Image 1 (tube, one colour):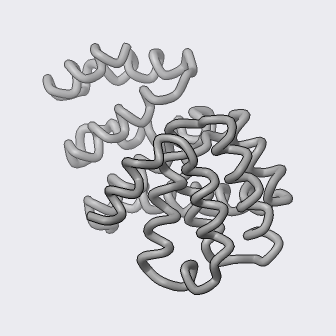
Image 2 (cartoon, rainbow, N blue to C red):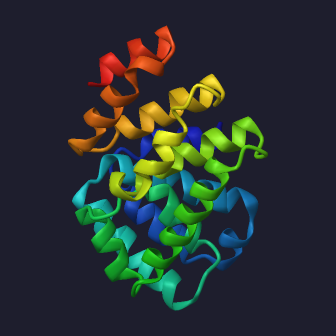
Amino acid sequence: YVRLAVLSSLGEGAGEALRLLAADAAFLESKEGRDMLASLAAQIGRQQRPADIAETMTALAALAKADSPALPTIVQRLAAKTGTPLAEQVAKATGGKAETLMKSLLATAAKRAADEATPLKARIAAVEQLRLSTFADQQTLLESLLAPAVAPDSQMTALATAASFDAPQVANLLLGKFAILSPRLKGQATDEI
């Protein structure tokens, strides 16, 4: 409850809080500390307030310099899509480490999403992470996840992930797969188009 109270009171100043907490080595080593930083990073990524972004970039630069194990979590939770101004700022602040981390994260997510042996919950989480990539990089995988043999929950997540991209090819993909989608997925695809 304390973490929720702190996060809800940080409508402004989340970046400063992240920077100050990330500078505390003992805080970084605790599970609660890492969870709090992850939540702050997610909030900052969603809000994208310039002052919070600036503070976060300062923290990321220090964490990258120290090669902190907290860096990947914060970078991932910022949820900066590839090619966006936020992703470019993060890459610059970390000296390219964040870009390397994201490439590795996305490669792992793509592998897990494609692996039918991966438990469904983990597979869905992996598909959701693909939103941080580009449609061009994930188009083939997302198309394969819309096949009738794929679990319906995975199909729904793949469809939502595809629709999260701002690319004209998404409509082509959805229209091309429309005939083989279940009635429920057809409704979702229609809403997305």
